[in-house]
Image 1 (cartoon, protein in one colour):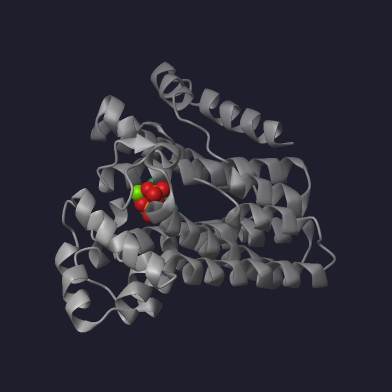
Image 2 (cartoon, helix red, strand yellow):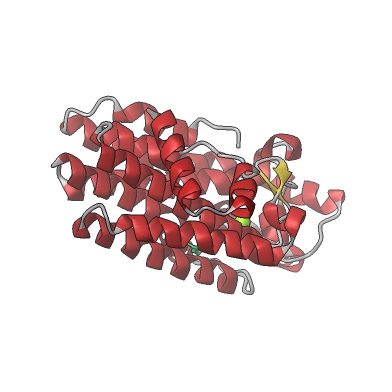
Length: 298
Ligand code: FPP
Ligand code: MG
């Protein structure tokens, strides 16, 4: 059924009747389509469901186009990002086009679904701003980190699950909790992979987040257990272009203090909570997609 979503996105793009946009869209790698999968699993394959899934994926793609400009990221999904290929202006405008076409189509679903999705896009944007602002500081507050990843990432998964529940006549609140937990876990794993994954698999350099100023969950936990001298060393490396010796210093301490295990455990707990919640609603099929959140290499 995912192919029906792909076809719907292609149709929305074709509606625009613009060769350049079609060409640019054709060059975007698709990604895992997790949000679409989530929507289809909850709500089946009616036309409104397919359209909602297509709209959410277009909004997600738009947000990544903008995010790569904001992050100066030249690689996305192991390929050159659109800003790397065509410059920031083109990437921003393609993002604007995907995003506004998505919103135009959202009007044709229902006002309830439109409200849920558009509220998430507000959160997404606030979260991205917070991410950028926080990276200028050495943030050690876990609650602040959790709020930021909720807004930046979990809000759209929460809204995807909530909108799907509305379309299927299911409990909006329970499904939103499920989507929220999945989204939080997804971003935590993303942040862990930045530290553990091979740069080739990840499609971006390792420990990039810390160099960018992002003190993600593993760094917050690591700082907590370091002695005062080591705390100072870690702080001095923040936002620095790290030498391999400095990278190893961080990685060794992460290993000694089992920081990755601790962070992974937290993500796993959120996923398990989500699975248990859905089991209570007789939605065993939703556990597979939840497991995909934690069981991934990139
Ligand atoms: C990726 O985070 C970024 C997001 C999930 C959200 C980006 C949101 C915006 C740019 C604002 C909304 C814009 C529109 C057009 C809807 P990351 O940088 O931690 O992840 P990455 O490693 O995948 O780059
Ligand atoms: Mg980014």
